[in-house]
Image (cartoon, rainbow, N blue to C red; front, side):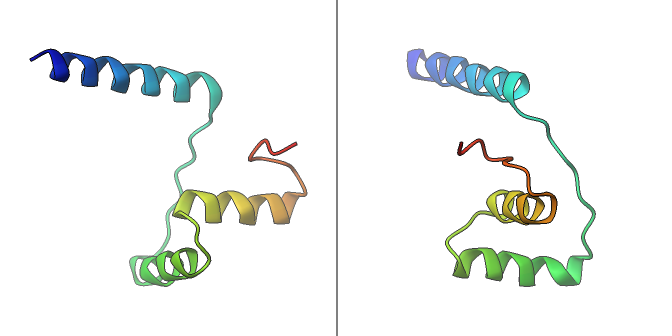
Length: 68
């Protein structure tokens, strides 16, 4: 019971952290292309989110990942 409560608190904290620091974007990608993107990301050691962020950074020249 206590472990469950701690897990709920941890999840609530993570959700609040993300809401305060990140903007969420929804993209509509054809289903038949999804696996291609997932495979590309995996081959390059990236998550889908990291792949999309890297593509946006390259396209815009902005530092979206906050590496600076």
